[in-house]
Image (cartoon, rainbow, N blue to C red; front, side, top):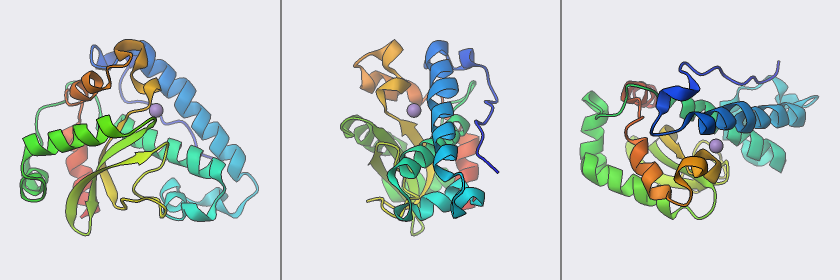
Length: 201
Ligand code: MN3
């Protein structure tokens, strides 16, 4: 068994103007595909060949660097494509909104904290909203690391994530990472995030 590039449930053009079609096409068909190809190459003939990507991430310290970089890349991007989409944005509801209010001081404070984590991540990485010991928290990881990994500084179950590598935004936003982060809120598929939160609980 080998990992495959997941098909998107929307067109490359569907996220415009927040993320342009060319960025989506390169990001999905070139960058994500490369993580999948390199991960498969790194795992061929090893005991990890039949494990899920989540299981690999949770024990990432046991693997060589190519598995950490490409396995993280595959998990993170598969996750990202699911939590964004067309006709999205707005606000969460139900238990997730209750938890954002209780654990993070409400939506405005949460967005501020998340934007800060995404803006101040130096170089390449990801910003996350995670469930950790029953509570929501915001953090960021370098490169293609994620909070599932046993080596992560902030361990937890991710329910929302944002790719802040330049390849995710540079064609349209150039050096304006904060503008890309602001536009991200128009794309968040809260129904999916609420589902991930319920599963994480
Ligand atoms: Mn990326």
